[in-house]
Picture 1 (tube, rainbow, N blue to C red):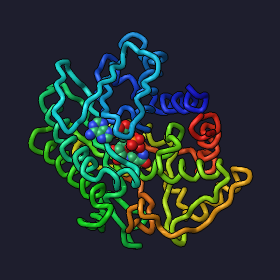
Picture 2 (cartoon, rainbow, N blue to C red):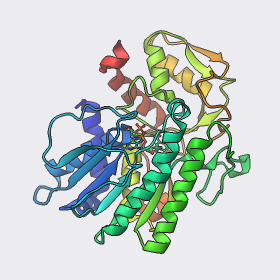
Picture 3 (tube, rainbow, N blue to C red):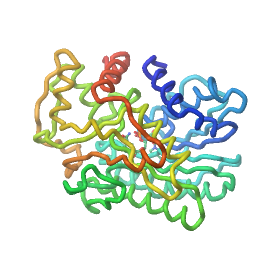
Picture 4 (cartoon, rainbow, N blue to C red):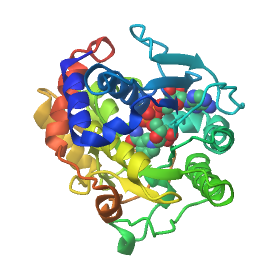
Length: 352
Ligand SMILES: NC(=O)c1ccc[n+]([C@@H]2O[C@H](COP(=O)([O-])OP(=O)(O)OC[C@H]3O[C@@H](n4cnc5c(N)ncnc54)[C@H](O)[C@@H]3O)[C@@H](O)[C@H]2O)c1
């Protein structure tokens, strides 16, 4: 594993502190275990087994259909099972499960435009199947549904930074609807299972998480800018480049997700992100020209492969995650990008 990822994992474990012991002797089922976030979760559980949970290890069942995730599962680990399965079908698991993390989904706009029905099914049918599994596991301690900041759509300027109480401004028929609306319905289904069946479910709404492990074909903005900068192609900024995003480094985000799983109020949704990193896409591209020698940028019309109608501003209000679960972030955008770029330089895909 790259030394940057090793450092990130150690930092997550340190920030979790005693909460990590809640996983001792437990079984976690994670969907989307071959994806960007899923791989960090698996690496963290491996680290906890090696250094924190020495006596009572955590067992992990990682499920993925590899529609976008990598099939390279790395070295064999007796505590981690990799299962090829699609969450749109019920999973037959005979052992007791204590935590379920539903991170399967199609997160990159270019890919959800390519696979709109699969995107809907992974969020809607997928979450329902996993909630049914949760319902049958009487010893279940936590269920985490990965929603998205996209459920807010294009918020009114008054609603930025956006709190969890904002209901969203979303088109049900636009090019982004397959993602936004299915995440919204996934939240509804999760909430109903909590209310009707007492499933101890919580929801996270991540605001653009980035970090090592996002491959050069990922097509989300940071890996895409990095890949183009390395190739010495002008970094393509869509439209005027005035649209903003915040970017949360992976080690801060994974800590927050697990804090929500372990300590979040059941039936509640939590924003997780970095509220200090709001930046326009043009300024983000400019930052790359400072970090990657020889990089340049160019504004271009929106390509057909990218879903139109993107939000103009996005920035989380994190007060709820701070006060309920003690969430905080510490990696600034420039530091995080330096870490990402240093990792990408060692990756064959980015070097090619
Ligand atoms: N990374 C972010 O910034 C971000 C932001 C908001 C929301 N999210 C959500 O968090 C979750 C994880 O994000 P990520 O960045 O790791 O995404 P990712 O695309 O890197 O990984 C998702 C994984 O899910 C798998 N998958 C998709 N459909 C599946 C299905 N039906 N059955 C089994 N596996 C399936 C894919 O093969 C992939 O390995 C997703 O649900 C995503 O929508 C992520």
